[in-house]
Image (cartoon, rainbow, N blue to C red; front, side, top):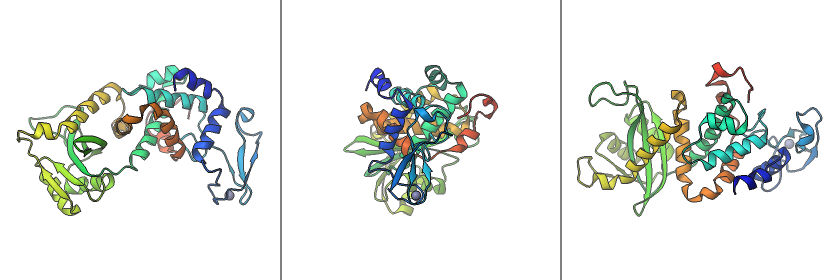
Length: 314
Ligand SMILES: [Zn+2]
């Protein structure tokens, strides 16, 4: 859908809310408290902009009133849904990753508001990424982001650099899905924790000669193939890992101006896009669906950028 069509379709709060209803309750409304599907629509004059919005659902069993945004990342947001939807469109359609300053200009919101919106969208992407388990053959490696390495050969911990674990699943040599995790170290315990969250239990693991991976493969009882970095074939074997690392660094350099603790969220955006690169035309629908299924994240709103939050809140 082009921008003009999108704007026409989601021109009003009611249009956005009706669409959210469809995404959240495909088979009709279900009460989040008692799961009853018997509900009536009620209008509450006390709601902000009540006239422009779709009515609340009131459960006939437990009488709980539910708005379509409650329990989603849009919960209690003071930003109109029309702006959220347009924001999601812009994020989905800018594959280099849109900057908060640009988003703020396009939406007519303050920089901190745009920054919070972006990070909530990234958090939704992150939740969706966590549902993926890479399978078949999975290549795993680690790389370093940003900062200056103090001393030759010293990387990762104890420097300004961030260590990132990367995994890419391959089918007949072609990349399928990936994950990226910021890690404090690359001990067996840490690497195992990442692998157990991100890959299926029956993968074939392919790595360089780092003994940590051998230890993890033994622990997980999975097949492990090793190609040493010094092997002539290493460049060809790990070409997709290397390509992804290169692209990630470009993406992070272009968009990342934030605080250390949010680096994982930037990586999640990259991973989300990569894993859906074959369905780019429907990316905004998928992103809105992800938002509708993702619980609110108040910690983001109270976390970063506190110093700048003397402006409109989310
Ligand atoms: Zn109920």
